[in-house]
Length: 403
Ligand SMILES: [Ca+2]
Image (cartoon, rainbow, N blue to C red):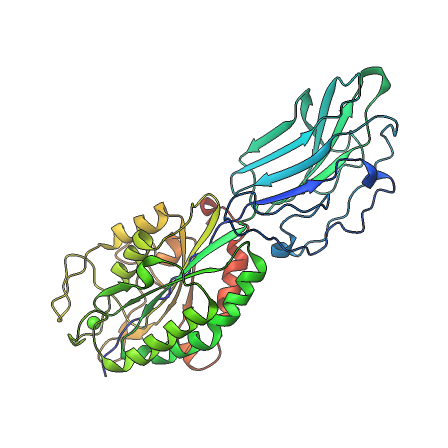
């Protein structure tokens, strides 16, 4: 029985969020807005960074984090002074911007923005004053993806004092995700393809719920050769990607290459080119806005350039080139991999996945990913949906540099 490797690549799309405050200051009347922290879903199909705007003074990417934020009381402002309107926060991984419209009331001298990292500012002194001038925008870089930024914006009129605050929260997380499954479709991988066919719909539904826009799932298959399916495009629907897994699940019994009838006579499969070509040729969206994930599945080891398989197919990329492509693309790799393999079933096939490869970090480690024991999928103790879901959730609010 030949051993073939399949890799799933999951591309996560990054997220950016926009939240909006009605700016009227009315929310501060009793301090607490019952709609704050509600689980409004982000809805945006255009993939832009301003993926969601909701008329809720504090709503942001709560559907990813599940946090429930209460708006602070503000008894300090002057009811008779007009505050700012249309307060919005938009953010990607490394940027956070506020914008608002200044009141037309005469005597406006400056706008004060107060930031608090744990709660809405109770008043103008409850936090750091990060902006104090006559303007209608504020931004900061070096934001911490996953942290909560609470802002209060006050319009000040000199001796008359300042208005009640308008409030907004921003939690930099990825609002969109691109995921590519990179699957070894050699003969021993049939159970994995079947498991994916059965569970990919759950992953799709989870993604549709948690991220903006239509889920973007891609598929690369490999044996000794590599095929980036659908010309590197995401599949249009849950049904389409499910059917593709069904097709390649049946293919595993052929012991053939993905693009020819050439047999597969050796155990290593071409994980490196599959990862590299997916990094290059899958139609990823911009890394600054998109959580990018590959889910790889293989049950044996790989060769690197310039080595060739017994089929005569030569590997195109070295290990280092492959990792560099992934890291440069800010792609995280979650790998289902084996520990023992080869013709006797006793060869150590962990290097590059569970352990270092020739002194270099494993692919999951180097890319801020995760590694899972593929045998646990076969025995039923590890479920793909829960595993991938957990990986996505853990990565959604981290910048790539955090790994
Ligand atoms: Ca092979």
